[in-house]
Length: 477
Image (tube, rainbow, N blue to C red):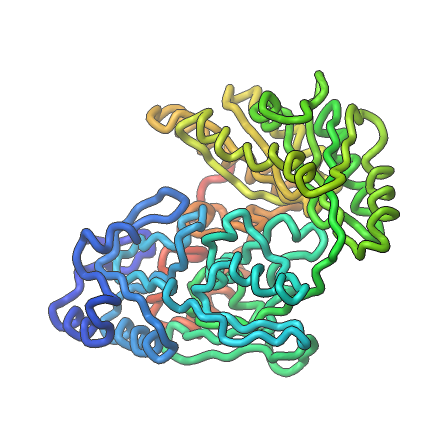
């Protein structure tokens, strides 16, 4: 099989190692044949690399035994949830074994009075939301893929979603973890209390580490009260700059928006023909805002949001007065992803983030980039956090077009960093951004990160080829 992107030698499993692996997992919880392994060769990034085997652990002790087996035989392990990641973080580029956590899917315990829930790594995000909702609670991380994104995958990539506008990112809502390090050691972090000042904060270290340090097996999640009152606002503006100015006014509110989504002119153009009520002529940007509050405060807080959304460039402002109306207003956001898939066969989707005050500069850069490259660039995202999903559309069957799209992404990354931003707001690094990580993190800091990796995973068997150890891409002049 040669050498993988990780630099780790990828050789077929020996007869001895295959026999030992078969002894660890019964036939119904392992695949050793190519046909069974192939569905686990890719994730939502559409990158592909077939593993030599796939296993489905159902208990912590099985993962410990597996990691120790992998160390003995120097076999790479790639942890995986349900494959919703968009950066290739769960693609087994070094071969070896995919560790599918999808059958570790129990909610271990639920404590509404303490506002915490303990779940295994394979529980889908949506199921956590449903259980919490029954007790009037909320787990704020809510990626678009919540129906099939698992808790372990969410935490491994630090995925968040639209509600980060009000509640912040995922790390805030993880009280503790049970994980297995690359050395086969069980690591238990955190506590079941909202405040904890004992020891090093290994919880925050493992969240976002993309399975390169340890395999997350179980998580203790912090919940928050779910506001009982909710409405939605849709504001149409002459252009993106006017919409971003309104976002900055919203950010100044004491009771700010629960969700604040932007569609730029290109995104709005894709969905406008199907919207009801229609957007006004000349609209170049749209904001969708959710206001969530105690019902006794909802009207007053909504009026404050409407005030903030007013101002220069506002063409139309609508409020949903019931749930069907709210669903109608949000039709624009839900229609966008299918529309993008129809528009082009290829899409580079980058989830960059900049300080919110720098959004107008980023928007201006994207307009210039589209004009200069001739590529169609469609942007939308969670702008209250400065997080913008930039979609660079191209012909996937045209090598020149693919090259221009990749170069445009490189130029975008450089500009984002110039603005004090980050290469990823919520998707993580994976394969897609590993060559650009050295642009954001200096050599000395990467050295510290490599030292941490060596402590947790001395043989380098966990998810090789991801995050660290990939040669830096040349930075545009």
